[in-house]
Image 1 (cartoon, one colour):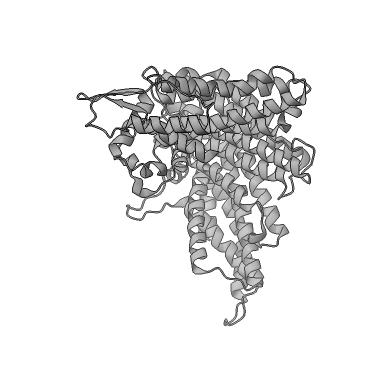
Image 2 (tube, rainbow, N blue to C red):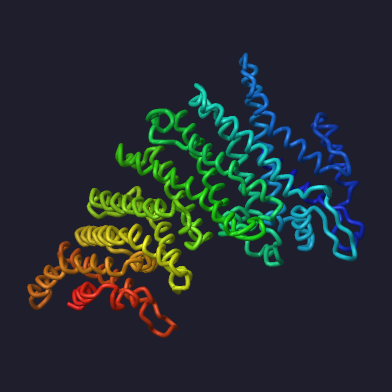
Length: 605
């Protein structure tokens, strides 16, 4: 079915343009396509929907819009027989295929790998991309128009997807408000339909407006979806403002996500052993994941004509931030009350993906709206507290699992996703701490207040990070020495490179409050140095085998030196060596006094 839809989307792209000057662009012969259509409709599908010349795209999107709306119109009526339920499932399947076709259609005009197989010049793809985006073009010599001059294909696709999304949200929220709240999430067809609708919405929002010539380099072999979904910032046109910059729309998305997300009960009360329950939870988890991807894209909308002013931009950021914090605080509350879920269960896998996605959304909000905007929001203290609490819980969970496997990190099931979430939290602190508005001192009292909030609410995470990270490295080194295991050169280089990046990000976190961070490291050095000196004094003339305890102690000293080195210095390759500004400010008179001298002396000794 998907192959047929892909073929159909390709035909639509080939016939999307009309040309008054045939010499300017390659023209697809109408008689060949008409012959193919007549052959299909006469011999294979006599009931196939046909679109009349001149209004093809308008009729196409109207037809798809009716198919997408059909399931929700029928679901408002109570089924009275099995045949009605079967008919409903067929409508849901047809609507899901319609949404998939829209996604494929957008993909054809976006310009992915499939464009290279058209055997048509690059100008044709550029023209199709422009016409699908804007609806018409006039290059001065030849008037080129889309098959739909009244509305661009991209706008029409957005209209279809948002209308279907509105119907989906309304149906789910109405169902969860009644006694059928659990039954609605047992409908596999509805969950699949919802995923398809959100997927096409994400594809539309990922559109690259005003794409240049470099976009049509087919030799790179890049994947369309990967390229679009990895774009950091989105710049939709002003005409989309009423649809996207809308508090009701954002509120509905978060309400739907709260209803859809698979909580600790898994939506079925621990039914992971049931194959059907596992399938339902998987589809429901995929729908929740796509909703988070939609929220991530909404968090990526950069400043521009879509925002009237900075106040509107700040209000938009605040709405998204509040919604994400509500979900993250709900997760933290569940963990505090009920403990951690066992790794490997479906509910645990879905929860781990949710935490990583939420941390990514918060990181994107930080990168996009910057601390100058976020620090003015009432929820800014909540934001910093949630980051610190979530980061500390993830670090402690990593350490606890590492202790349970006695340092064999290859057996840690939750290590990768926790490290991904921690990396996003460190990116948040990095983006805020190194922001020019904060570091340059030009922000005035507002910047000073924001800096104090970072030092008091987020910087305390540096202590748990150092302690957990150093302890895990010691356990890992103890295990490898005991088992005589060694990393190959390639894995060792990858590990060292990853550690350097991680330490650089963690240093930005520690520099939010340099004195407190150095006090933490000084305390850890004071605990390590007596044992290290005793080891050196008892080493004798050498030649003894390195025991696991010795290796762990040496690894502890190495990690502490790395933490201190990254905190106090920057990588100055190709630059004039200079002390980081945050360290200089911390050493100024009145910023630490005797405390500053004490931790400096601790490091030197």
